Image: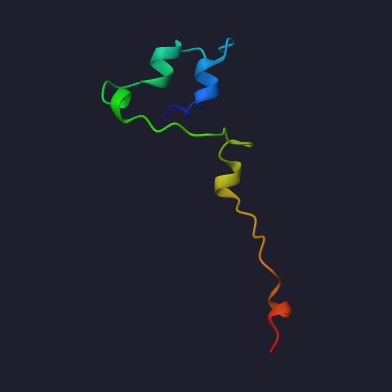
Length: 64
């Protein structure tokens, strides 16, 4: 699976990925018309998706 690129990544003067810009952004023909543009990059790649951080109030604070 190829990573998603933000609009800022695509229009940036610097291009780091080994693929060409067009191939990286539009890997398949249908993607050009149906592209979803993420507004931000992942901070820590997939680590944050696999290791969720709960920001909930502790159960003790829900006392009766």
